[in-house]
Length: 121
Image (cartoon, rainbow, N blue to C red):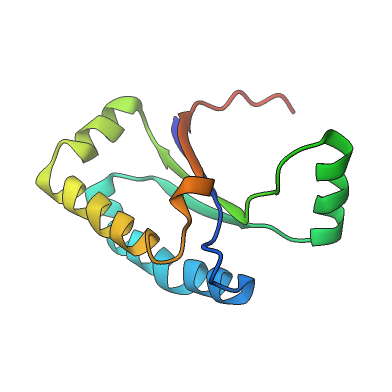
């Protein structure tokens, strides 16, 4: 399977509480409504927790500030991703989600990329 990994940072003028609530309740529903057009098989949100522990981890490695969370979306294959992006419905769905994301995600401080998992344990 192919997995999109989207490391999210909220816009600076949005509180953590507002960000997580909107992402989980409103945005997730928009993804669900567009699942068929996207040809996605699985969608998961991982919200950052334990800020004190995250800060210790960050400091121990000299890293930049952590992301606010991660979205993961799975497809059966890269061909399915291409097929979704190659249809008017898929393009429209992606555009609608992008427009919604622009209201709560800081694109300049976020990252997105495709991966293939290799399970070790």
